[in-house]
Image (cartoon, rainbow, N blue to C red):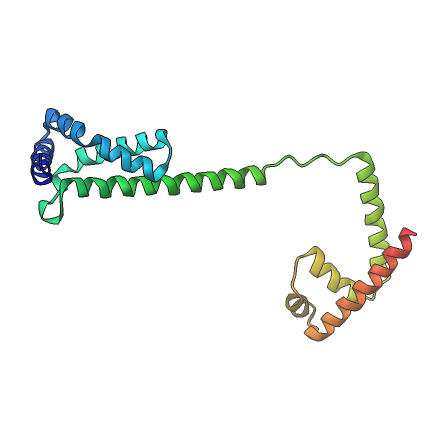
Amino acid sequence: MSTGDQDHDLSVLLARAADGDRAAFTRFYDLTSSRIYGLALRVVRDRTHAEEVVQEAYLQYWQHAHEYNTSRGSVISWMMTIVHRRAVDRIRSEELSRRRSEQYAASNMMVPEPTTLDLVVQNEESLTLRECLGRLTDLQRSSIELSYFSGMTYPEVAAHTATPLPTIKSRMRDGLRRLRQCVRSAER
């Protein structure tokens, strides 16, 4: 059978399927399924996914058979375009699903409970930090607290305290230097 004859036969079968002829659609499937499955398999590279893509494509062929237009190309081209789009959509969907699973797993990893020793050390460090913060000037302390504990940026700290930005930057730098020296000396 020539390609032209086969395309004509497929067009006739598809037109009959559009009118609800199940037997015509069965014959249509028998004549085309191996090519459609082959393309799906080459794109998705997984037999199970390829079978699902083919099933979705044939459902679309059945439901939209009336939309096929002979002036726009052969039936097999129309079919291959649909199955190719479905296969690519499946790959994208699987990739997105994989990324979501990885993100979910990463965000829900078990964080170990702190040990008693961890809590004691953390409490000592907190007391040392509070003591050292108390040794800073008011502007240094408030600038550091706003930046590190309230999450403000330097310009936001400057606006909040009605202090010029260069002053905030130098007070933060000097305050952090004094804080670092104080914490180091407390550790000795």
